[in-house]
Length: 219
Image (cartoon, rainbow, N blue to C red; front, side, top):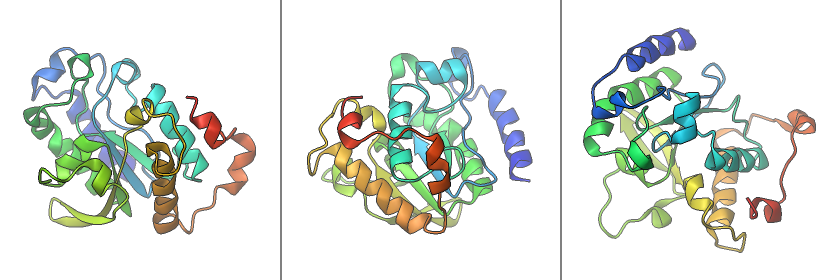
């Protein structure tokens, strides 16, 4: 049922020309993950070059790093997480999507959340956070990440938490205490314990090559 509903939304999205981003896209980047089993909706910023080429979110270097951190936390990208972006088309030169572009795409974003009906929403990066939360000038992602909050989407409340975007972690390789990568590990462990305490992927680990923290730091 969820897949059928999402296919209807995808079809409308692929035919959308609601903003200028539609003119230069190669592919609409709608989603990734299993909507039937996903308990978490993870929202990123916007598609990059590889996402535009493949039509899938989080497939470049940042996406691979996100995969490593998810696996290390015992969270399955394929089964536990439904990955989307605030906009479905690539902004030129990978710039931050404008407010108008986000507004034009918001109906698709909200529909995806409503259909998945997740246990929690993970806001990945500052753009995703600002889409749902009004911040004052003193509030930065570094200060609000890792804190559980409630956000409202079309009249329904959801548990939500903010994490660093993996593209930011590509520029910060340290695994020292308090570093962005160490905080990412802690935040994903928190999400696993809070949202997926009943999900065990230990049987899957024979098929997965995990990276030690020092190896992650070299990505």
